[in-house]
Amino acid sequence: MCGIAGIVNLRGPPVEQSEIRNLTDRIAHRGPNGAGYWFSTECNVALGHRRLAIIDPGPGGYQPMASADGRHVIVYNGEIYNFLELRRELEAVGERFQSESDTEVILAAWRNWREGMLLRFNGMWALAIYDTQSGEMFLARDRFGIKPLLYALTPERFVFASEHRALVHSGLIQTSVDVDVARRLMLDAFSVEGSERTLNREVHRLQAGHFMWLREGKRTIGRWWCTVDHLPVIPNTEGERVEQFGELFRSAVALRMRSDVPIGTCLSGGFDSTAVICEMAEHARAGMGPRGSTAWRHAFVAAFSGAANDERPMAEEAAKWAGVAPTIVEIGRDDATREIDRILDDNDDVYISLPSAAWLVYRELAKRGVLVSLDGHGADELMGAYRQEGQSLAYYLRNSLARLSSSSVALTHWVDVSRAMMLKGRGCYFLRGGLSQIPPRFALAGESDALPEEWDALNRRLYRLFHGTVLPTILRNFDRVSMAHGIEVRMPFMDWRLVTYTMALPGTSKSSDTHTKWIARRAMQGRMPEDIRMGRRKIGFNSPMPEWLNGPLAGWIASLLNQKVPAFSEFVDEARLDRKVGQLNAARGWDWQSVGAIWPYLNMKWSLARL
Image 1 (tube, rainbow, N blue to C red):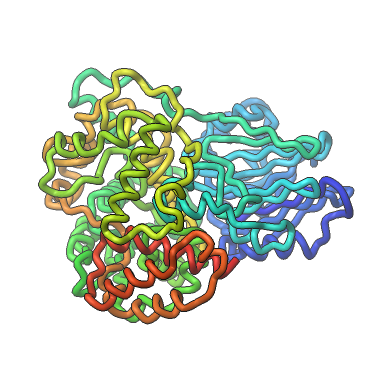
Image 2 (image 1 turned 90 degrees about the vertical axis):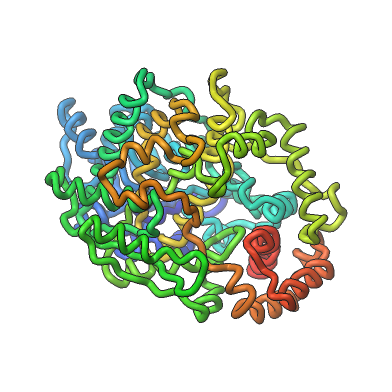
């Protein structure tokens, strides 16, 4: 797990050492264990790497790494969990290895399988491989976009990095605000990350499951992964389906416990994270597999004393079941504004709330030398979680049809206008020009996929949440706030085998009239605390935003609103925004609904002030 960067000068002078060092230094937090650089013979290509040493933490894992014959050079961010199995397969055809790292396995896989290697990988990655003979560069991103890869291509140069802010502030490219993206982020903060567009026109995102070739200054982008093309045949009976889900989940956890450094988990007390830590304990009791970390008994719990979203009692119960003494990270009112600018900067984009809670918990992991966290991300979007307690499945489906049944431009535009009118009616819509300012939707990952005809409305909605809207945004957030402290997050629920299997199941296996994630809850029977297994409380890993906005954040917001940011004023009616915020502050009327509607505007103004 690391930070990667690269520069290809297409014309003009060679790449200066200061240029690649500056670009790589801007992602130094992603790799606190060292920096590495590589230059081509003509110095027109430079690769940079910041190392977070997880697998083979000694010299054998240094990057950029060259192949044995010197032809290929790689920079890579992520983990290939099945690298031991792939290594044995490659050794059988004559490959020999000098290190114990998964990076060297990728280079050998490239020599033998080229692009076909990607389908063999079980893991998360963003990588770039340069061919010193042909002058071509190959870049690729994992199936679901767990690890980031951003780039810019101008007539002068091609530049890539692990984070948006690194490119924007590198001095290597001129940037300008993409106003359509800004407007869309404020209307719906989940509608951009799944696309190739970013807040700056010149910076692009390589989408999940895609690769890119750079040849003679021209890019060619292709898609190597489409989930519906890999759906397996599912068992006939529900009992067999539950059993197979459990086997896949246990295998996913076991693979992600491979580490040469201490590992742990962020524990909320909800179903997802509790399932993960309980399976970690089961795997340890059964005997660790090859390269499994024996230093795994670490659980970190965010506690919000007196806040509505405090899950400490359930988290402590889960830790006790797993035989782990939890580390409690107390988060209080003072944390609302403490290091707020750094947290917003580390999040690297616009969101619906302040990610302080996660940022603070991952900081605690780093302080205690736990460099890997197995977390429960992906389960909500894979199996359904976004309905409130007391709602039946029928209610959930009936009230979600607008986003379920179609991805047509007409319907999605109708949804956007409807949402905008609702926000306007509540005084929470502040774009200049009214509804005419709603930009068209961008092409999101997975939305044009031909889904099986037999799929019900729930499966269609979950596919979109997982690939195009909610999950890509959440993955970005957790990548940034964890890597801000050099922490690697692994996600068992996002093992591609488990994802394709669960996607293939009917909606009734995922959501009953009383419970979401039904298949997983049944698979975990007897393997975790029963009240958590069958609990119906859904909170999420959030900072207590309403409490903070009704208290310690009010002054910070007032100061932000008083700032003059011309780029923001161009498309936001600031007078109306100020009035609404003033009303909420005076009445101490912030709730989660108003937070979700208004915080993106505040986050956007802060972000544009920093550009």
